Image (cartoon, rainbow, N blue to C red; front, side, top):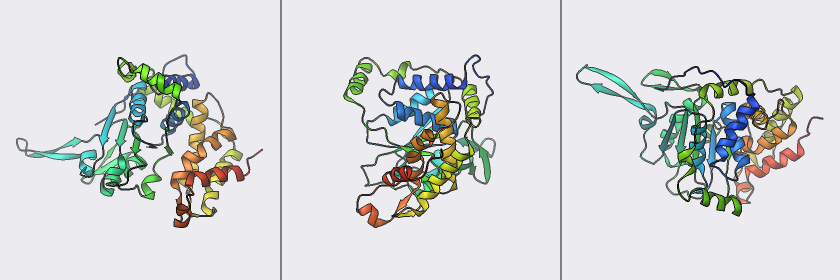
Length: 322
């Protein structure tokens, strides 16, 4: 079971410089994905979880591994399949005939960074095993509660183009993710750079940690100290509340979304080297934080309307504090 070890942060570097160091290290592997890397790093420092939804081969797994290697934390990967059981993730008690007692064998969820690969291929029962862990930082197994590491972070992936043999994540599960992102395809120049970089070996093989777990804990604490005015807090709340009355929306974003949007804006400000939140930070995060929490009515889906489009229009219409 993972235990937290107090490590002093690197002296002489500001929190902004530390965050920039992590981002630059990840970008050594993730060419042409600056915006996505910044958002994932912001989610990590904000204490949220990330859902990466994109086509195969776009670098979802590589991004998760690069983050874990950059911050020198424990990393586990679980390949979700239809026959995966909750105990395969959480762990199980095994009877020891010599001692005549049961001993608990911790599952891969007891880590600091967990990659839940192709999460929508597992049954709802197995998917729900992550709910308590993502929401409360703990798991209940056989009547006992086990606390997870304070750096516990989930990056889940799913393929949006394959539906056979998959189980769509329910609204409650989607709401546990701070952001949903898509890496997309990089430019031709960046793709050539990727090919050249992997001509002899994968860049991940030589990637080294640039900060300690203690640095990350200090950064996560500093995110809470990034200044955000009452007017911008109200702006974030207004954006979330606007989704509840938007046309074609059956289920809007709840208060958890307002909290996620403000915390993500604070973390993004830190990653971008700022000491305070601006309206741009909130606008930049709005679609990634809010869209996956919406449920559209069937007629809107049939017409081709997406939740991302709904949120993008609300960002244009909701008044920005002056």
